[in-house]
Image (tube, rainbow, N blue to C red):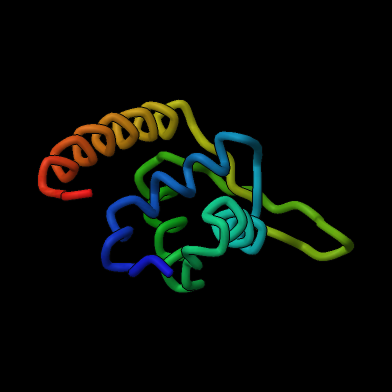
Length: 106
């Protein structure tokens, strides 16, 4: 399992990736993060909903109500600004990875 401390700065990136693939709701976003990470990272519910609130407040995602399996859900959609922010975070990650790789012995 990956420590949440290590991945903390990239929770927004993971969420934005998922909603860039299509509108989704909280539980489904959480499940996709777990699946995509091959069960190596599970985002806590409080972390997820705090990030969704922050992303929406900053204009990177929007939310709307919808139905799934007869239940009301809040769906999230990425905005154009969110797409730009996602790209910036991906570029930042590439630089971060390049720097850290210089300190890792394999």
